[in-house]
Amino acid sequence: MSRHTIAILNQKGGVGKTTTTINLAAFLARSGRSVLVCDLDPQGNTTSGLGVDKQTLDSTLYDVLFSRADASKTIKEVSSHGIFLLASNAQLAGAEVELVSSQSREYKLRQVLEKLDYDYILIDCPPSLGLLTVNALTAANEVLIPVQAEYYAMEGLSQLLSVIGQVKQSLNPQLNILGILITLYDRRTALSEQVKKELEKHFEAKVLQTVIPRNIRLAEAPSFGKTIIEHDKWSKGARAYKSLAKEVDQRLYG
Image (cartoon, rainbow, N blue to C red; front, top):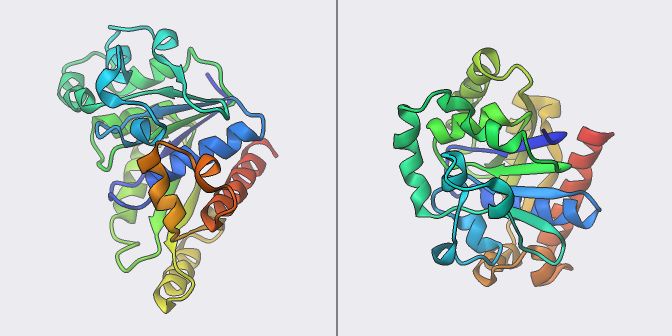
């Protein structure tokens, strides 16, 4: 198994999970780390955000999970920066149903990923706490939780932490919370700063020092199928993800 498998998870949509997965991967790969991105969301936004056409895939993570395809033949190198991808599309939505009757259903993703050799595997999780997410938590040894600096930021966090705790206790004792990442931060508003202080008060050192700003260049990059490095490497968003990659690498590799 790779040294660091990170599930990027929040059951709320629109918090920057996919943006974080793509751009953290880009800067980790740029620093010389080998990086695999695993798109575990049936929406396949990470796949298209990395410039891959979801409709023309010969095989996807869905096929690999159920032994209909080989992972090494399904993984594609997708970026000039050396990011590798296990792609997904809407087919993966059927996996939730199929997994219910599968033997060792919580361990399907782990069985796939433990045979692969990368410095980092980043798993972009679906915005739900179903069986696919449980598979991600069982396969990972770290969880990164993006939380938007907005009014309902804390809502659902206690439920999410409870699920992580249950998986750690019953399925994966190695699971650790890498950190809470504040996203969509707007320093011009009192609310953003208030939410940041509230998170730091409750979660202390678990809140990462890097804060991801609300940034138009970050928001538009996926529509071009590009990482922020390829789209605008001098933007505020790019500088923030470069800082995040350094902070993550420092926390995990020292």
